[in-house]
Image (tube, rainbow, N blue to C red; front, side, top):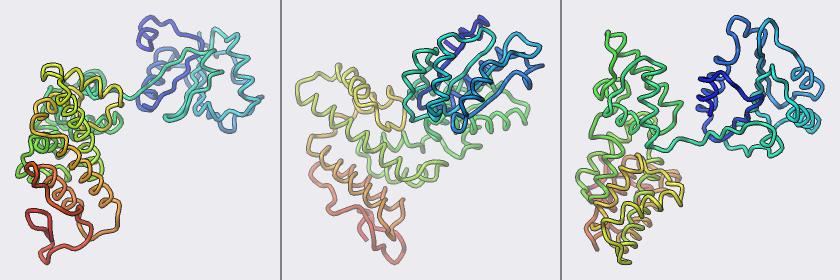
Length: 367
């Protein structure tokens, strides 16, 4: 809707921007202002205010002010939910008969429910977080349109695996990658650039750790814990959360298979499950998670899934407790328990206290 208005240069009198993704929201505000307001007179014809402390009389004046030497002016009211009753009443009256020469942008911060009274009078724009599959496409789009570089598919995948789906963080890391290649006279960001700039290597990502655990490959899983936890902006808590989401997905897959669902129907069932539950923290795009869970479902029984969830709860509690053990030791012990052969899961809780004299635990995670 925003891009259509920008391309047509035809704007609604008022937009109400809400939803949880503040980065996309701010980008839409910039795009609308750049397209609608003459840059040569923008200093005179664009005002940004906050709802908190914006009194009714001042708001009425701002809404009635005509543009100066331009076709249109803009008023951005951030944190619009903080308007007091008087100012809110002024805003509602204005929206009943908005001016044709004012672009009004009402903005609610992420996590705040939009005001129904304003939704009725302005064009609503809901900025929900992008699903993981669209994040990867956004990386390529942002690189090409904003930074002037080509981002290869493997680079986009590696960057998303390293940073996650936070667009603000992705934009910052992508900007560093673009500066790196452009400084060397290049125009393409590939996986080697991401590895050099961001500090993550192919084959040592959270997705690789999840795959190793799903395959119950304990040796590979333990070897990956250290490199994964050294990834910038990633610590033990989101790793355990991603492992828990995977365990729930595998438990659901196992239950459906035990209920008679054929393997070929499992991917659709898992996609439906993710949609119904909101997805949780899959640690990768849903399509990749569904493929991995489908491949691994036969390696897990209902009992091993239940044991895995119990071990994950213990690890989560261990990470929240004051302890001597490091995060690496907690996660190593956890993945060994998850990967243990059927009926041979290590006993006891995830490590919370004593460590051997060398500072490391034994292969089974027992000091």
